[in-house]
Image 1 (cartoon, rainbow, N blue to C red):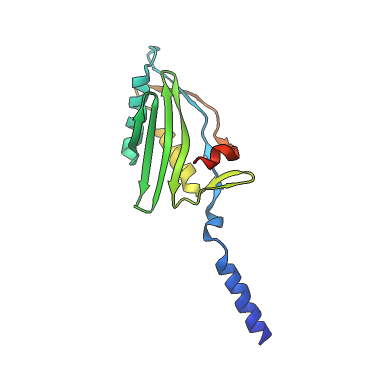
Image 2: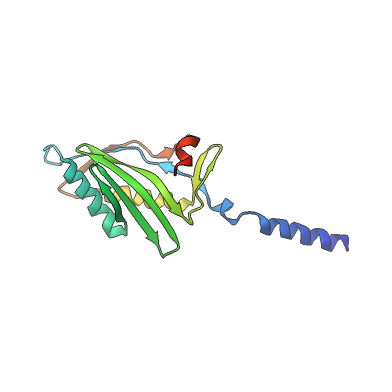
Length: 157
């Protein structure tokens, strides 16, 4: 009887573990992306904004908020997962930063923020599409890496 009870107890404990724990990865904050015009002309902030929108919209990203030099882009995956990122931009390039999410297991841990691994893929795909042949060219983008977010900053997310 003890073996059956112990087995049931272990099974119950395993079921009680948070299911999202296995579906988290370090949140990767991509480096700033520098852009330039292929013809050597200086870009304007409006051209960089247009490049962001031209790359984002075909992938399903929508503008949820806009101000000078800032676009908040939202992505809704099948009505189940939702994320907002902030694109800050100027005439030289742009940077994407996590703002908030729903159902993506975002959690600030000791080593830094973690999120569902799909988020990191969505962001890398977005960056890859923010290039318009003939209009702008990516000059540089340091490799993306996990960046621990200070607790005070993470708490405001």
